[in-house]
Amino acid sequence: MLKRLSLVGIVTVAGLLLAATGGFAATVDCISCHKASNPALYMQWKDSGHGQNGVGCYDCHKAAPGDVDAFEHNGATIATLVTPKDCGGCHEAIEKETSNSYHAHAGEILQSKDAYLAHAAGGLPIVIVGCESCHGAKMIIDQNAPNKLSPLTWPNSGIGRLNPDGSKGACNACHTRHSFSKKQARQPENCGKCHLGPDHPQKEIYAESKHGIAYSGFKDKMALDSKEWVVGEDYYEAPTCATCHMSATSNQPITHDVGNRISWTLRPPVSKTKDNWKQKRQNMKDVCSSCHQENFVNGHYFQYDALVKLYNEKFAKPAGAIMTMVKDEKLMESPAAFSNQIEWEYWELWHHEGRRARMGAAMMGPDYAWWHGIYDVAHNFYFKFIPEARHYKNAKVNAYIDNLLATDPMHKWLSTNTGEIKKAIGSGEFQKIYMKLFDQSTTK
Image (cartoon, rainbow, N blue to C red; front, side, top):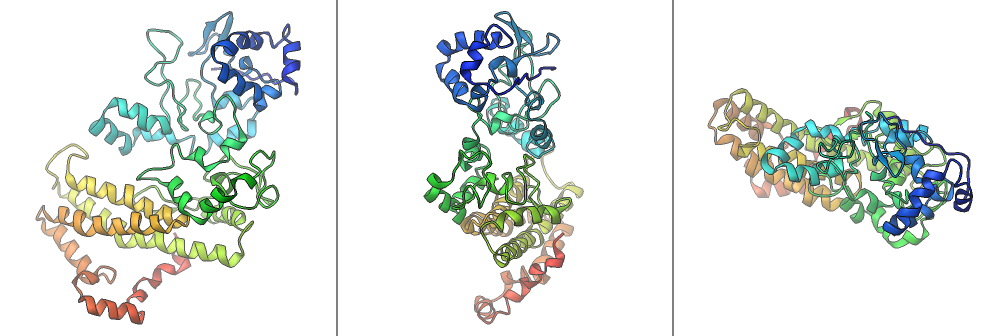
């Protein structure tokens, strides 16, 4: 797709109409129909930054005749999709950051176990309206209507959409068409379309955190319409998702690379620090320091790192080792992935409960860190996952589990008298088992 944007200066809507006989003729033709047939769409565009600055329908939807999704429409060659490559005609730096971000690669989940499970246990309709609506789909052309998008993949505003022009992503996943509002994109509700639910409940965690509570109480003082929106200058009462992960500070410019301030990866079975994690952490600490003192920020990361390492060392690594043995020993009864109970128990251990615990700690959501997190991890690990592994009656697997529970200080509590445990907790001796997890030199 070789569409291009033709922003020709900053003009008002009135100026646009006056210029109708020139390069804006196609846009005016669009308006003449869509104002009547889609009045809300027209008003969204008219009041948007695009509408107020002379960027019309044809500027964004114009297509070259050879584009696979180009079609003739009332004398103009257009395409329905507006891709990051198209937006990059004007927003070049933003497009590059977006295309290199985790968001743009979200469509790669289509080849992951998540998508396999949805296809196998669910079926194609739920893959389309569920997985692909957040992560993005590979857009295909309707065989019965050449050059137009297939209803199998359209509509779709998934953040990692795979577009016909080779680009990845969908700007309108965050900047909802046709208003493309900064104000709307800066609010946490905007992120809640995808970042919520049992396996990645960031929206719910934010809402229970002090950050979310402050936002709820002071939303009207957040200057969400501000042009620059610099924390500590344009607003100060609370942060939103955009504040921490994308928006400008007095020391950092805005970024559309949402991983630029994230130091741990919290998605996989075992968390690891990201490439260049120290710089990324410093980027986030800079945001935090707009409102918090250095000791406060460092204390948060001290606690957060320890929780991630607790999850990794006590539960994730042993569970992963057990699963490897079960597979190596060819113990599972059914050949298909996810057709065995132990696979579901392991999946929920890390993919659901484990993520909730880690994300709860990251975003200061105590209920998600414990009751929706480590509490569920522990219950699943001890009373669902391990019993399911033991039922195979395999000597190697059982020997590993026996040794883990009998000799690892973090697990020996299971075979210890309750009174002794309480006494050890009261004296502080029990807590010493975990103090090594607070060693900052072990953050890897």
